Image (tube, rainbow, N blue to C red; front, top):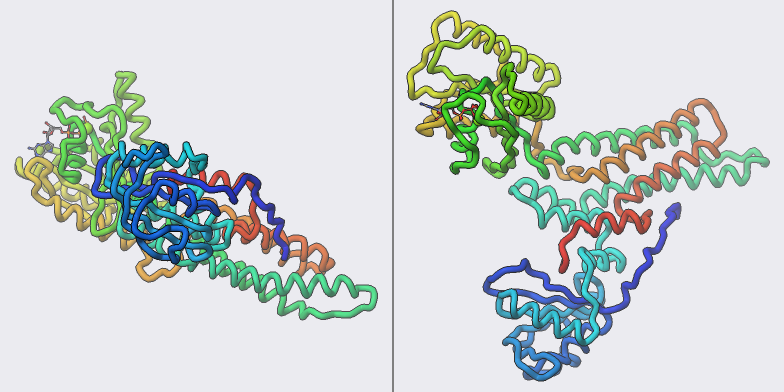
Length: 476
Ligand SMILES: Nc1nc2c(ncn2[C@@H]2O[C@H](COP(=O)(O)OP(=O)(O)OP(=O)(O)O)[C@@H](O)[C@H]2O)c(=O)[nH]1
Ligand SMILES: [Mg+2]
């Protein structure tokens, strides 16, 4: 109902094959087949105790795998799933062989020579979607789960895979379908002057839906942080030790460090996981006026990074007297950030050289409204643990997490669809309030339903599907 579902073209009834494990050497690799001929094709290369053709679903079989010419390729374990109780909803065969590029390639080639088609990226999951095993947001969660880099983003994807977002969307849609139905029914009887729908109630329901969508949209910021990490930017004057701090946090010599001010020219970004939360730490060029063209561009990029940061680490070198200019810059940076309620941590570096903070400067430091002040030595590692804790604490306090949130919108496509759904609903509410014909209200309601349907895939087009599944790896 109300779905302009376009059945995706392209064959989904042939048999496909792919190496499901990453390339390289490992204990085990898996070659996976799906399709109506998966079991007959697997049987052609397999010799073991029993016959695969007669095997029951969800069983494993040890044997030999050989190519068309009868040359043994490897000892294998074949796992068999019969439709519809499989990942794709079709017959699925998984051949576990010894890990290694050569063996897996030869097994794959054997199938290709038999006429099995090589799977496109994400095609197994696409079939699962087309066969109704999972909906679209769940399929996308599979990709996110594979790409999850931190404990927290893993958890958010897992919830989505379990269909928690889908459930919310489906509930929302069924309520809206109900009122659209009532409005449309009424339109059929408009000449008889019959009224089925309680106008007030309909408006209430639409307002409720807008609020619910608003709630989901609000989780997106957190969702994005789960997925992409909290963007932490190291900023400060040249030579204060920003690159040294990045290295200390990463515990590796990632960025070039020298005692020449202006060493870092381009920005460097690295992932850092602290207590399961992912941070993207960006080292930038020291902020100063310069005539060097390359450095100028670097400084421009530093400012760009500060602008898009979620959290700022403002680094000062406290082993030498701090200049008024430097303090003014620090104060201004943090103030600008605060205005957008983005947090900053003041990092006082090089404490191993002794602190040179005279009274006046301490007063100025106090004026910088940072969320935390941490004293460290990037050189000796002193205070780095404190800095990590401060990072984690600040991210948590700034609402960059919702521990108990059951549903998080992490996907830009979902966010966009929710936003459009809300727009349409607001238009519907306006028409309703202005006493316009139910026809107008219904049009916008249907648009909202379409937008919501795009999330779960009730409403979909080939373009959406291709875009989503092309981001998968082959074999998934
Ligand atoms: N004693 C001491 N020296 C440090 C510390 N942190 C950095 N340094 C030294 O300070 C100098 C500059 O360090 P960098 O990390 O390159 O500084 P930066 O802020 O990245 O400098 P630019 O890239 O030029 O903006 C180097 O000689 C580092 O070894 C520290 O905690 N203690
Ligand atoms: Mg540097």
